[in-house]
Image 1 (cartoon, rainbow, N blue to C red):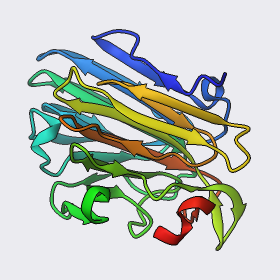
Image 2: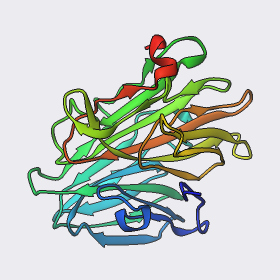
Image 3: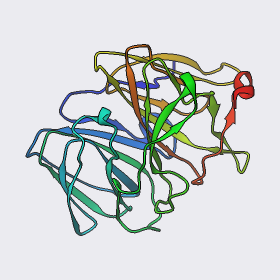
Image 4: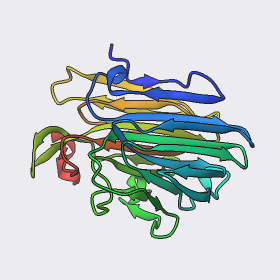
Length: 264
């Protein structure tokens, strides 16, 4: 059975560390750091560009030789306010000191040194609706294809109301055949409201050689190496996820599953 579901390995410090080596792929990395007020963390970017997403809380951040001041605003991700984020290219250092308890995501992919460090959001990020009815969800686009300040990364936040589906109709992006479809690895960092709830994510290929259905809990990460990957939020439990995608080219092109193609 593929090990697609990653539980946090603690409640403090680095609680997720997904690398291309550990995931068995080539491009996407994802770390999650949970700190108390007044704590510090620092790392080099190495060969990766990163987007730091302040999921919750506030922190003073220094990166690429510049003081970026205090980043962060929302204390609970389900406030749905635009995130404060920072892009840092490869070959740079970053450090932070929290001013409140904080949850910080570090989204990673190969960098080519083609862009400068820059702040992303909250200005310019607007919550938009995608889908209708029980397929409606709400998106904070952080760094999707229309934004050209990254070498590899595609990053977005999604809020799925209780009882709704998301990443649906089911679709895949696992072939390098642009413009029909692009190869993009993907991680989903899940949160649930209330936090003791659960959601569902399925990852499956057309031939069902990969066919996994997982109960996801608050703080879990799901890796999507290939195939379709819809999510469901049961009645009574609102779902958030932070998506990180990357591949050989920075374009998002997908193909729907045959059984749901008529819904596109």
